Length: 158
Image (cartoon, rainbow, N blue to C red; front, side):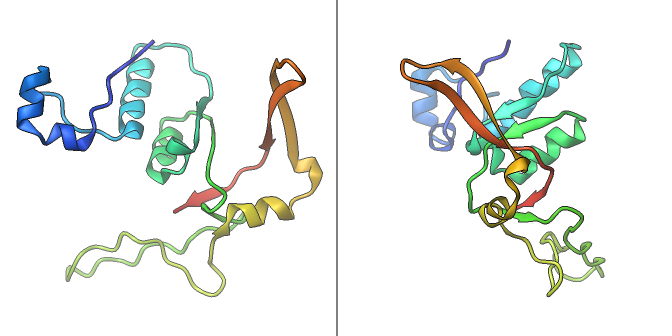
């Protein structure tokens, strides 16, 4: 449906290498999640039927990527590393402080004694077995291949 060659940042900044390999000037560095989001937006613009977005942790660990997918109104199932921080269901970070016009505007999420995320692994291990579901996708030579999914919603942040 869509493809694009990933151009590493070091290549994007190397004028000699770009010229020798014929990389057009309009091609600039983009992260893989940025490229994926561009392709997803293009598919939506073309009114291609939607389905959940599936990714590995290379994309799933990127909070901005997950936020953009949600903003597009799409559902997703993404891999994340066990060290990613999450908020318990019903909890969220404190709102950003109002900028007073001095210094840089606040970007960081606020936390306090009652508003702290913790590793997703800790949360996952605390859930009942009924929160998990194994989904098989094909038969292997010895046993079915499958993944164990956690069917739950969390607000995930870095």
